[in-house]
Length: 150
Image (tube, rainbow, N blue to C red; front, side, top):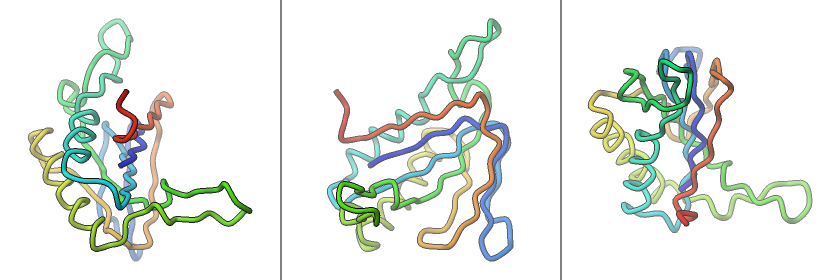
């Protein structure tokens, strides 16, 4: 499971010309799920996301986590994070999980992040054509791969 975590001042996702989810201070999280991912990957990645200390403290150092600053999460599924560009110019998405694997893990991630954060999160809609808008703060963008823990 791969997550691209962006610290944002605001972010929103629009589906069929209607805002489906929106946050102010927090994380826009793009998540890609492979056919090899499981509950262990989900929990490890979810704890990493909520625990990231990338918000400024009183001295301006990145030292505070999402809970401490009262931040929110906007979670967006994005299978293209697992694109392979090794051959040619057309990406292959063979590593991305099919819906029967990805949808349940995505839905479990929503519940897990809500439990870890202690409040509801905003999210996109799996498989939908989404328009994502954000104001990246910093910018701070971090890529976390549950298969690369060492």
